[in-house]
Picture: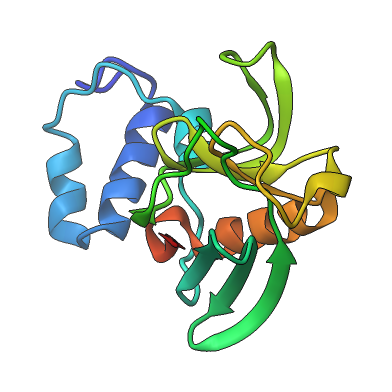
Amino acid sequence: MRSRLGGSPLRAGFLALLIAGFGGAAHAEMAAEMRVASLDIAGLRETTSEAPGKQVIARVDLSEQKMRVYLGTELVHEFDVSTGRKGYGTPTGRYQVQWTHPKWYSRKYDMAPMPYSVFFHGGYAVHGTTAVSRLGRTASHGCVRLAPKNAKLFYQLVRASGNENTLVSIVR
């Protein structure tokens, strides 16, 4: 038996379950009437978290080259960073995390590794670096660089709390 969704009964059941989680039984009944071109379950899993936790705030101070990470109102980490060197500014402002990737490579800068990337504004991200001796002073093309172990801690915190629950604030 195929559903009107153009997929298997399993896909229809998954969609109904997904919609039910966002609005109850009434919305689940409407799922059978919806038409869906495709459902990328892997992509959905990569861009969302299972259950949002406390708000994460990463405050990057460009003048100090420090990032302080708060979970709720509690300071949980303070890291040395490297931000944009002369000619490559790091954008100031408040940004919600857009997406994350554990092993990203920069297409713009010769496939430079960007482990534990947390993207917050277009191509700008908080990520790990192998140039740990440069931390504490400007050195990047605009991203916020961290020691790999610190990037992993921040990445895991963002993934646990959810992109929608994470704010990156960059100040001078």
